[in-house]
Length: 380
Image 1: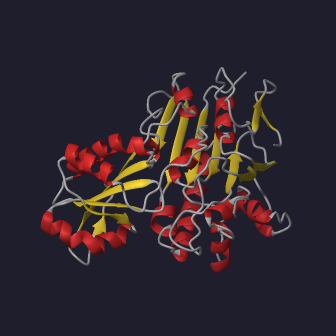
Image 2 (image 1 turned 45 degrees about the horizontal axis):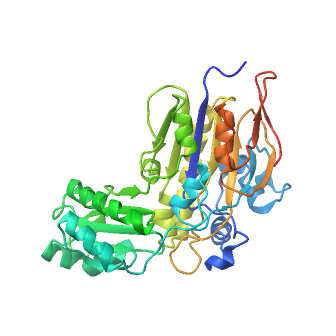
Image 3 (image 1 turned 30 degrees about the vertical axis):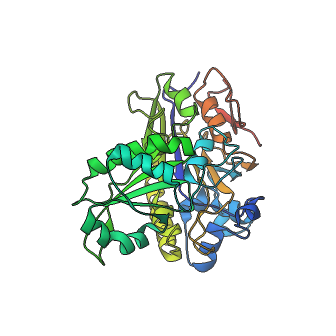
């Protein structure tokens, strides 16, 4: 017999890379190691809950270190197969969609694209260049207040960002502008359009929590496949934005909760804040310590990441890294090896929820068998 309730949690710790991927040099990321360099810079950092899930074994393969003892989860690494290192690409592959061509990036958006958005949204932009989100507010925020013109900018990721002061352009109007931009951005293969509201006065501008990501709608993912069975698929954090709401809904009892912890990346990785990143890890470790006792043996908990963002690396961009994989299910702790594709997660979810069809890419790291109503792990 199978469990009466099938509950899965997929937790993506945004940017928590664990060492350069084999192709990191092609992305300018040779030597990147988000977690490794944080531990090197903060040697006093202790994460007992993460260590109990196998994190220290993932990082060092040192099974004799005290931090490797008492492991309660199965553990391993994953490599991204898709081209690119942005959040959308990583999350899509986790959900079972592999991109052979990366999303487009720009240092300046083409005049044809900008004019089309301006025409349909009835606005005129200032900016249109690559900048850090906090820096561009310092540079163009005063002009925006004078003119009322929204700020258009980008970064090393495939993003078109539009910033506006909430007093000048309310959030609802900013979202409307971004929805129009999203329609035009599809033809240019831009992964995300991001609304960036802010408040404050010159010299003290602050971005608010009204950020809204408008992503390209992906091909069918495992989220859609699970939702189509009538099971709940609920996004927490920026997940709903990344998947453009596709396959994310909140009805039913059984199902999948897909959560993203964005602060690692947004507040610390991009800002090259090693100490802040370490503190965020401590906070997450404490949260996990309170959450994990609520999980049942038949639940499936998968903790991983979507890319790296080494705060000691050059620049402020994401880094092409392998990511940790920690899995709680069935009370077992086994080495899952290095998975060759993030889509192994999608294949595992398809197996766990007993979808009619095996997921077409990736291999499940659990095998369901009707023997003692237990889930049997097997090595990759």
